[in-house]
Length: 226
Ligand SMILES: *Cc1c(COP(=O)(O)O)cnc(C)c1O
Image (cartoon, rainbow, N blue to C red; front, side, top):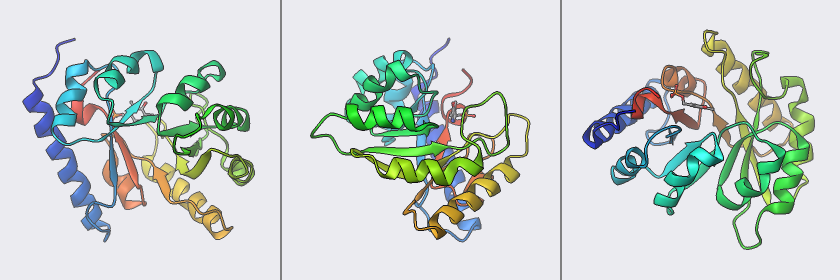
């Protein structure tokens, strides 16, 4: 793969930030309310460094092994795990990441609670919801969200922050994000103190911000194709 010119990455970061701000204003939201998570999977270390030098603080990673070089190069960045969670990888995730967006079963959350090192801040957790019933993706059914959120909130060393979804690739992102927002509102109405909706990618961040996204996860628009 050709590493991209670092100037391109700084320019693309500015473009994505502008897209987010335009979407925030269009939705009547405060500018700066939505957090940009830069998804650097498969990218050379230089790409992540260029984004960090241009002021990017939070990075998302799908695979531990692929993430290792970038994480070593940027020890002060905030790292978010957004990939499928294998049980035998929970310790490494608990030791290295600030956030996990893809919790889809109590068993992995129990492992995170037991394995989060003493002295680290609680692990910030989102529950992944398969809102559009896509068999190709992980995530719980919306009907199971109340039960799982209640169970996770009883665990030590982690803080349940909210919900995350990935819409079907050629599906209806508008319906998916509207659905996740409705579930989020229902959980909050039930007394769960959630504040995070992790939804929106390069092609549909405007739709996600309109429906209340608080974190958008952006790869291609920042780093080019993979
Ligand atoms: C790769 C990935 C993204 C970024 O997708 P782009 O379309 O490249 O912006 C976001 N979320 C998850 C879970 C991903 O795996």
